[in-house]
Length: 243
Ligand SMILES: C[S@@+](CC[C@H](N)C(=O)[O-])C[C@H]1O[C@@H](n2cnc3c(N)ncnc32)[C@H](O)[C@@H]1O
Image (cartoon, rainbow, N blue to C red):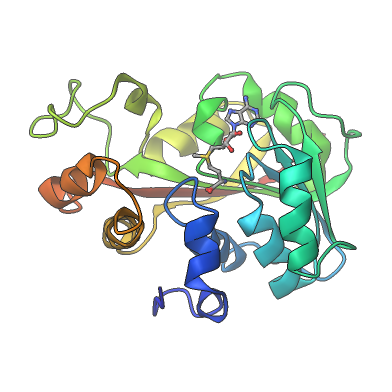
Protein backbone atom coordinates (compact mmCIF):
# COMPACT_ATOMS: atom_id res chain seq x y z
CA UNK A 1 0.00 0.00 0.00
CA UNK A 2 3.00 2.33 -0.24
CA UNK A 3 2.36 5.08 -2.75
CA UNK A 4 5.10 7.52 -3.75
CA UNK A 5 2.50 10.24 -4.30
CA UNK A 6 1.31 9.99 -0.69
CA UNK A 7 4.35 9.61 1.60
CA UNK A 8 2.54 10.51 4.84
CA UNK A 9 -0.03 7.75 4.19
CA UNK A 10 2.82 5.24 3.98
CA UNK A 11 3.20 5.49 7.75
CA UNK A 12 -0.23 3.87 8.23
CA UNK A 13 -1.06 0.19 8.07
CA UNK A 14 -2.41 -1.08 4.76
CA UNK A 15 -4.53 -3.57 6.71
CA UNK A 16 -6.10 -0.66 8.65
CA UNK A 17 -6.95 1.08 5.39
CA UNK A 18 -8.44 -2.03 3.77
CA UNK A 19 -10.44 -2.95 6.90
CA UNK A 20 -11.98 0.54 6.88
CA UNK A 21 -12.72 0.58 3.16
CA UNK A 22 -15.75 2.51 1.97
CA UNK A 23 -14.24 4.09 -1.13
CA UNK A 24 -10.96 4.29 -3.02
CA UNK A 25 -8.62 5.02 -0.10
CA UNK A 26 -9.75 7.94 2.01
CA UNK A 27 -6.26 8.26 3.50
CA UNK A 28 -4.58 9.02 0.17
CA UNK A 29 -7.34 11.46 -0.65
CA UNK A 30 -7.04 13.18 2.73
CA UNK A 31 -3.33 13.59 2.06
CA UNK A 32 -4.17 15.09 -1.34
CA UNK A 33 -6.29 17.71 0.44
CA UNK A 34 -3.66 18.28 3.14
CA UNK A 35 -1.21 19.20 0.35
CA UNK A 36 -3.32 22.15 -0.76
CA UNK A 37 -5.21 23.32 2.34
CA UNK A 38 -2.92 25.00 4.91
CA UNK A 39 -4.02 22.95 7.94
CA UNK A 40 -2.51 24.02 11.25
CA UNK A 41 -2.58 22.50 14.71
CA UNK A 42 -5.73 23.39 16.63
CA UNK A 43 -7.86 24.20 13.59
CA UNK A 44 -11.44 22.92 13.73
CA UNK A 45 -12.21 20.67 10.75
CA UNK A 46 -15.52 19.15 9.62
CA UNK A 47 -15.06 15.81 7.81
CA UNK A 48 -18.47 15.27 6.22
CA UNK A 49 -19.28 11.79 4.97
CA UNK A 50 -16.22 10.48 6.81
CA UNK A 51 -17.40 6.86 6.64
CA UNK A 52 -15.10 4.88 8.93
CA UNK A 53 -13.25 8.09 9.93
CA UNK A 54 -9.87 7.06 8.50
CA UNK A 55 -9.46 10.51 6.92
CA UNK A 56 -10.40 12.21 10.22
CA UNK A 57 -7.86 10.15 12.16
CA UNK A 58 -5.19 10.80 9.52
CA UNK A 59 -5.71 14.58 9.54
CA UNK A 60 -5.71 14.72 13.34
CA UNK A 61 -2.46 12.76 13.57
CA UNK A 62 -0.66 14.42 10.68
CA UNK A 63 -1.68 18.05 11.17
CA UNK A 64 -2.77 18.27 14.81
CA UNK A 65 -6.23 19.50 13.83
CA UNK A 66 -9.45 18.79 15.75
CA UNK A 67 -11.94 16.93 13.59
CA UNK A 68 -15.70 16.40 13.77
CA UNK A 69 -15.99 13.04 11.98
CA UNK A 70 -19.53 13.25 10.66
CA UNK A 71 -21.41 10.53 8.82
CA UNK A 72 -24.85 9.12 8.08
CA UNK A 73 -24.33 5.40 7.48
CA UNK A 74 -21.51 4.71 9.97
CA UNK A 75 -22.54 5.41 13.53
CA UNK A 76 -20.41 7.08 16.23
CA UNK A 77 -20.11 3.89 18.33
CA UNK A 78 -18.25 2.19 15.52
CA UNK A 79 -15.99 5.13 14.73
CA UNK A 80 -15.24 5.82 18.39
CA UNK A 81 -13.53 2.40 18.68
CA UNK A 82 -11.25 3.25 15.76
CA UNK A 83 -10.58 6.74 17.15
CA UNK A 84 -9.58 5.34 20.56
CA UNK A 85 -7.41 2.65 18.97
CA UNK A 86 -5.61 5.40 17.03
CA UNK A 87 -5.05 7.40 20.24
CA UNK A 88 -6.79 10.55 19.00
CA UNK A 89 -9.82 10.52 21.30
CA UNK A 90 -9.05 14.10 22.38
CA UNK A 91 -9.00 15.31 18.79
CA UNK A 92 -11.59 13.40 16.75
CA UNK A 93 -15.27 13.62 17.65
CA UNK A 94 -17.66 11.14 15.95
CA UNK A 95 -21.01 12.62 14.96
CA UNK A 96 -24.07 11.05 13.37
CA UNK A 97 -25.77 13.52 11.02
CA UNK A 98 -27.44 13.88 7.67
CA UNK A 99 -25.74 16.41 5.39
CA UNK A 100 -28.79 18.72 5.42
CA UNK A 101 -29.21 18.67 9.20
CA UNK A 102 -25.77 19.37 10.56
CA UNK A 103 -25.68 19.98 14.32
CA UNK A 104 -23.07 22.75 14.26
CA UNK A 105 -22.99 26.49 14.84
CA UNK A 106 -22.61 28.88 11.93
CA UNK A 107 -18.99 29.97 11.49
CA UNK A 108 -17.66 27.17 13.76
CA UNK A 109 -15.13 25.53 11.43
CA UNK A 110 -11.79 26.66 10.00
CA UNK A 111 -12.07 24.02 7.28
CA UNK A 112 -14.56 21.48 5.97
CA UNK A 113 -13.60 18.50 3.87
CA UNK A 114 -15.48 15.68 2.23
CA UNK A 115 -13.97 12.62 0.60
CA UNK A 116 -15.89 10.34 -1.74
CA UNK A 117 -19.14 11.73 -0.38
CA UNK A 118 -19.92 15.31 -1.41
CA UNK A 119 -21.40 14.23 -4.74
CA UNK A 120 -24.16 12.37 -2.85
CA UNK A 121 -25.69 15.68 -1.73
CA UNK A 122 -23.58 18.57 -3.06
CA UNK A 123 -24.62 18.58 -6.73
CA UNK A 124 -27.76 20.48 -5.67
CA UNK A 125 -27.21 24.12 -6.71
CA UNK A 126 -28.26 25.34 -3.30
CA UNK A 127 -26.27 22.98 -1.07
CA UNK A 128 -23.06 25.04 -0.95
CA UNK A 129 -25.03 27.92 0.59
CA UNK A 130 -26.01 25.65 3.47
CA UNK A 131 -22.65 23.90 3.85
CA UNK A 132 -20.45 27.01 3.67
CA UNK A 133 -22.26 28.78 6.48
CA UNK A 134 -20.62 26.45 9.01
CA UNK A 135 -17.25 27.93 8.03
CA UNK A 136 -15.66 31.12 9.26
CA UNK A 137 -15.29 33.73 6.51
CA UNK A 138 -12.05 32.78 4.78
CA UNK A 139 -12.49 29.16 5.93
CA UNK A 140 -11.44 26.36 3.60
CA UNK A 141 -13.58 23.80 1.80
CA UNK A 142 -11.95 20.80 0.14
CA UNK A 143 -13.53 17.86 -1.60
CA UNK A 144 -12.23 14.85 -3.50
CA UNK A 145 -14.44 12.27 -5.18
CA UNK A 146 -14.71 10.15 -8.30
CA UNK A 147 -14.90 12.43 -11.29
CA UNK A 148 -14.54 12.81 -15.02
CA UNK A 149 -11.90 14.48 -17.17
CA UNK A 150 -14.72 16.32 -18.92
CA UNK A 151 -18.51 16.22 -19.08
CA UNK A 152 -19.76 13.62 -21.55
CA UNK A 153 -21.86 14.49 -24.62
CA UNK A 154 -24.15 11.56 -23.75
CA UNK A 155 -24.55 8.91 -21.09
CA UNK A 156 -23.52 6.22 -20.53
CA UNK A 157 -20.10 7.24 -21.81
CA UNK A 158 -19.02 5.46 -24.97
CA UNK A 159 -17.04 2.31 -24.20
CA UNK A 160 -18.15 2.09 -20.55
CA UNK A 161 -21.78 1.06 -21.12
CA UNK A 162 -21.47 -2.37 -19.53
CA UNK A 163 -20.09 -0.94 -16.29
CA UNK A 164 -22.06 2.26 -15.93
CA UNK A 165 -24.51 2.72 -13.03
CA UNK A 166 -27.11 5.44 -13.29
CA UNK A 167 -25.87 7.25 -10.17
CA UNK A 168 -22.46 7.86 -11.73
CA UNK A 169 -24.25 10.84 -13.29
CA UNK A 170 -23.11 12.67 -10.12
CA UNK A 171 -19.45 12.28 -11.16
CA UNK A 172 -18.26 15.55 -12.65
CA UNK A 173 -15.20 17.24 -14.07
CA UNK A 174 -13.08 19.87 -12.28
CA UNK A 175 -14.50 22.56 -14.59
CA UNK A 176 -18.06 21.51 -13.72
CA UNK A 177 -17.39 21.80 -9.99
CA UNK A 178 -15.59 25.11 -10.38
CA UNK A 179 -18.57 26.62 -12.17
CA UNK A 180 -21.04 24.94 -9.79
CA UNK A 181 -19.42 26.69 -6.84
CA UNK A 182 -18.33 29.97 -8.45
CA UNK A 183 -21.81 30.77 -9.74
CA UNK A 184 -23.02 31.11 -6.14
CA UNK A 185 -20.56 33.93 -5.40
CA UNK A 186 -20.22 32.47 -1.91
CA UNK A 187 -16.72 31.06 -2.28
CA UNK A 188 -13.50 31.68 -4.18
CA UNK A 189 -12.30 28.52 -5.89
CA UNK A 190 -8.53 28.24 -5.54
CA UNK A 191 -8.13 24.90 -7.24
CA UNK A 192 -10.18 22.47 -9.30
CA UNK A 193 -8.09 19.67 -10.74
CA UNK A 194 -7.74 15.93 -11.23
CA UNK A 195 -5.47 14.03 -8.86
CA UNK A 196 -2.30 13.02 -10.67
CA UNK A 197 -2.47 9.37 -11.72
CA UNK A 198 -5.76 9.12 -9.86
CA UNK A 199 -7.12 6.30 -11.98
CA UNK A 200 -3.98 4.22 -11.38
CA UNK A 201 -4.31 4.69 -7.62
CA UNK A 202 -8.01 3.85 -7.80
CA UNK A 203 -7.26 0.68 -9.78
CA UNK A 204 -4.39 -0.32 -7.50
CA UNK A 205 -6.65 0.15 -4.48
CA UNK A 206 -9.39 -1.98 -6.04
CA UNK A 207 -6.94 -4.73 -6.94
CA UNK A 208 -5.73 -4.86 -3.34
CA UNK A 209 -9.27 -4.86 -1.88
CA UNK A 210 -10.47 -7.43 -4.43
CA UNK A 211 -7.95 -9.92 -3.05
CA UNK A 212 -9.96 -9.85 0.19
CA UNK A 213 -13.37 -10.05 -1.39
CA UNK A 214 -15.67 -12.49 -3.15
CA UNK A 215 -17.50 -9.58 -4.79
CA UNK A 216 -17.45 -9.14 -8.59
CA UNK A 217 -14.51 -7.08 -9.78
CA UNK A 218 -16.35 -4.95 -12.33
CA UNK A 219 -15.02 -1.66 -10.95
CA UNK A 220 -11.40 -2.67 -11.57
CA UNK A 221 -12.43 -3.88 -15.05
CA UNK A 222 -14.07 -0.52 -15.72
CA UNK A 223 -10.91 1.36 -14.70
CA UNK A 224 -8.71 -0.88 -16.87
CA UNK A 225 -11.01 -0.40 -19.84
CA UNK A 226 -11.06 3.38 -19.42
CA UNK A 227 -7.30 3.59 -18.66
CA UNK A 228 -7.57 7.16 -17.35
CA UNK A 229 -9.31 8.65 -20.37
CA UNK A 230 -12.39 9.72 -18.48
CA UNK A 231 -12.33 8.42 -14.91
CA UNK A 232 -10.26 9.68 -12.02
CA UNK A 233 -10.58 11.86 -8.94
CA UNK A 234 -11.78 15.44 -8.98
CA UNK A 235 -10.36 17.69 -6.26
CA UNK A 236 -11.82 21.13 -5.52
CA UNK A 237 -10.58 23.63 -2.94
CA UNK A 238 -12.23 26.95 -2.13
CA UNK A 239 -12.47 29.58 0.59
CA UNK A 240 -15.65 31.09 1.97
CA UNK A 241 -15.98 34.72 0.90
CA UNK A 242 -16.54 37.44 3.49
CA UNK A 243 -20.20 38.54 3.52
C1 LIG B 1 -18.44 6.05 -0.44
S1 LIG B 1 -18.60 6.45 1.27
C2 LIG B 1 -17.07 7.32 1.55
C3 LIG B 1 -16.69 7.30 2.99
C4 LIG B 1 -15.31 7.86 3.29
N1 LIG B 1 -15.25 9.28 3.18
C5 LIG B 1 -14.27 7.20 2.41
O1 LIG B 1 -13.81 7.83 1.44
O2 LIG B 1 -13.94 6.04 2.68
C6 LIG B 1 -19.78 7.76 1.24
C7 LIG B 1 -20.15 8.29 2.63
O3 LIG B 1 -21.02 9.39 2.44
C8 LIG B 1 -21.93 9.39 3.49
N2 LIG B 1 -23.16 10.05 3.06
C9 LIG B 1 -23.87 9.82 1.92
N3 LIG B 1 -24.97 10.58 1.90
C10 LIG B 1 -24.93 11.33 3.04
C11 LIG B 1 -25.79 12.31 3.59
N4 LIG B 1 -26.91 12.67 2.95
N5 LIG B 1 -25.45 12.86 4.78
C12 LIG B 1 -24.31 12.50 5.42
N6 LIG B 1 -23.45 11.58 4.95
C13 LIG B 1 -23.77 10.99 3.78
C14 LIG B 1 -22.21 7.94 3.82
O4 LIG B 1 -22.63 7.80 5.15
C15 LIG B 1 -20.87 7.28 3.49
O5 LIG B 1 -20.12 7.00 4.64
